Image 1 (cartoon, rainbow, N blue to C red):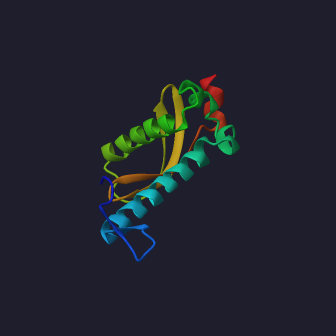
Image 2 (image 1 turned 90 degrees about the vertical axis):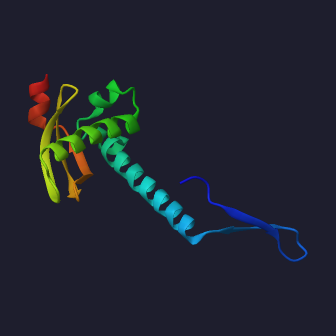
Image 3 (image 1 turned 180 degrees about the vertical axis):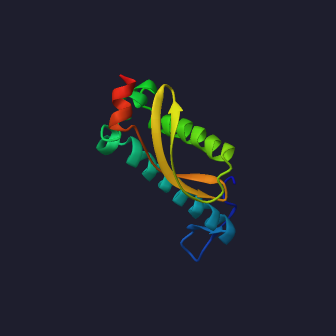
Length: 131
């Protein structure tokens, strides 16, 4: 969307520049920040130190040299492809996908064909079978 357009002027005797931002641009920027924060929260929930070992995703994250964002986007993209292929339009989803040699179970919500992650994990059973 680019940078918000602004108008600079001085107000009163202070000489302080005043910036006016279009409400639509402001709303767009707030939505972007909110969306980025939600994604950041999802990444931390799935790939953060607190849950990484619990979800058994530490080995997979090592394959990304610790890059949580890249791991999240790659796996999310693969899941979105599966959701599209299965023609899931709406509802809760739990399924398993083969990803980089790992059997990943995922949950989430599909709205208008778009997958919104809940969580990803490797089950204890699948972890034993991978060994």
